[in-house]
Length: 525
Ligand SMILES: NC(=O)C1=CN([C@@H]2O[C@H](COP(=O)(O)OP(=O)(O)OC[C@H]3O[C@@H](n4cnc5c(N)ncnc54)[C@H](O)[C@@H]3O)[C@@H](O)[C@H]2O)C=CC1
Ligand SMILES: O=C(O)C(=O)COP(=O)(O)O
Image 1 (tube, protein in one colour):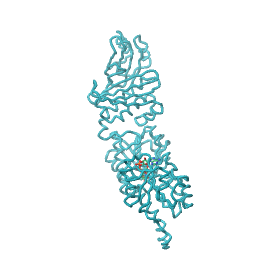
Image 2 (spheres, helix red, strand yellow):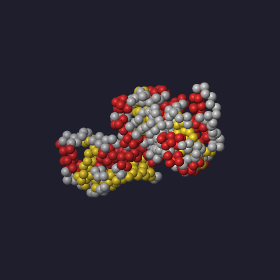
Image 3 (cartoon, helix red, strand yellow):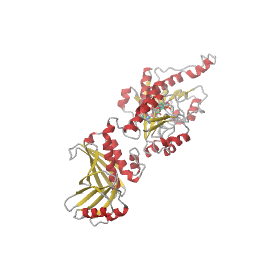
Image 4 (cartoon, protein in one colour):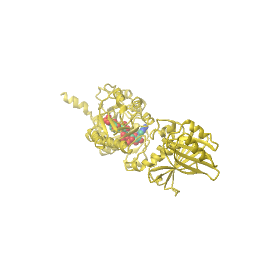
């Protein structure tokens, strides 16, 4: 039974779902990094929110970990590069808290426009400072969206309801999408120059870090108000303080901070800053949504191999997962064969799909094939890490789908171009689920993928089978099955021999030395 650790405060629905689905679950929110490192090795899955930091050090201790599930959107607290390199799938729940977060951004904008928190504190203190808290209307004002994805577009919709004019900067927003949303696409400087309110809805990335810095504030309208319910770090907090002090920025409403939990901050203690402790996603509805989603996604993945909302893996639906399973195996075994018989640096892999398989979701099959090829070179490779490792090694990957009738109902062909040669191996599924090799470098052969196999390339002349039989019987190695193929009579030939037990290096050396043998290699699946 797979085992999952929940290390942040997540709705109890997640625990219930894991248990109902047959996943063992431990609920331990608030673990220190050292406590997490001490126990993470026991778990197949880790469910988190924003508090747990999944660092390379944590991943180094996570020998069994297969999936990190983020009950929420932002995954900047997960070192995705390290997770991918370790073959750990990282998934999030991209929609469960977006309405809630958009509503928080609108609330923060209103709170900032009317200084509600400061007015509230003053009124509770019995001061009745009616003239101190003069606000501004939202009606007719320009709202500048930085980032117009899921949350940004909900904010735009709500702001339009408040009769604001919405402009947006998002390099990935198409003109059609902007039109659909009823927002004006502008460049960053235009947004800075025109917006009365700016609200941030981008992830924290290298491009967005300190996006609102001193020079950005200089370009803004006098008296602009800033809302950040995305991530601390997108605003340079010291620069914002200076811009508030200078009166350039009239107010800011911040849910997120560069350092969290934020116990101290250069922006704290001021009436012109509204602050909440990363509450964007904190509603009963959103927390239930993300808990249900994360638990279902993680359980599906651990129990069936279905992949939903992963950031470092192509999706595989729950319906597709069982259908793809035998093909994944075939793709990985073909890759493994190619990897085991290739000795020189691999430059390019071409994965071709023909027949029934070409109509399926082939992305995971490509990853499985790459993983198979690379596995003989590194234990750490799996489907998640394989594409990255291939890229790091400079291996070019191509995928081809053929829409043509072939000899087989379904066929996967893998071609490896290495420094010295180009070799291909093809396979199909017999009986719908049994992987078989059907072609090696253009020579037809029909063989299973088994534990102990010998792959021989030889000259097609009489005597090889006799020599091999004698040699194996001398060494007490039993042949389980023997599969031969050749280009033509007397031409290049291959043999795949399935053995009942492992063959020693000495036996392999003797086979390699046989007169008709060009090359002999051990292959295992
Ligand atoms: N305060 C809170 O509790 C919450 C905060 N968040 C934060 O909100 C962020 C946005 O969430 P979603 O809208 O769901 O994500 P999303 O991925 O749907 O949208 C993000 C948008 O930002 C755009 N973008 C990326 N780089 C950009 C750049 N350099 N300049 C301008 N636009 C850029 C993207 O094209 C995309 O359209 C999350 O990444 C997360 O950090 C999300 C949920 C709750
Ligand atoms: O979903 C997100 O990106 C959030 O920032 C929400 O964070 P939280 O789950 O409330 O710690």
